[in-house]
Image 1 (tube, rainbow over the protein chains, first blue to last red):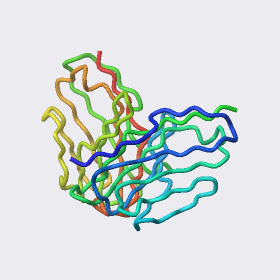
Image 2: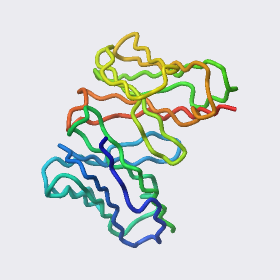
Image 3: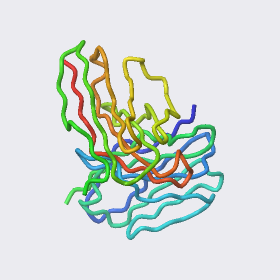
Image 4: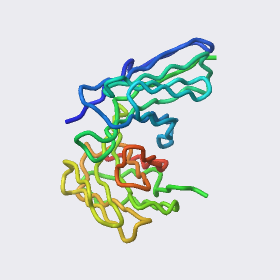
Length: 111
Length: 115
């Protein structure tokens, strides 16, 4: 069974601070996706990383795929209240034919 | 236009009842999914259909039966509801069947509460 552990599980910070969320597994994935879910809504895709060591930037969000394609990180610079939400990583490929979702990180950015 | 829609948004029912959740996507995708999100926000796949055919069926009690009348619809019927079935159920769709760069589009979810 492929498992993706995210840390921290909960994160509450002040507006303007930086933060990093981690997504780790013992399994290799062909790609890693990050989704954000807001209350009462479904997850929405933020980014897909495919190549080991790949770094992608989406405004203040920086995503990195580990060299061995077993882990990923999401770094947010100067967090804003609008960044509040549940962040989910999801691995594709490997031994499973479907997305395996991580345990989630609930981020709260206080004004 | 809503890409993936689910009805109802909320469902409150008694233990032992049978209920259905409907899902429709207007994206022209070939693959649709049902996920269960528990109280700890863990999202786990239940079923996947590609062009009306079941391709993934995770370890789910056989009280849960998906039905896909056409590739734009994937409904979920649940028999003999139990307290542990309380969760948020998400429908999703994607163009490909689990491709490594495939984007899944999620519906707004159905919050099921079993009393």
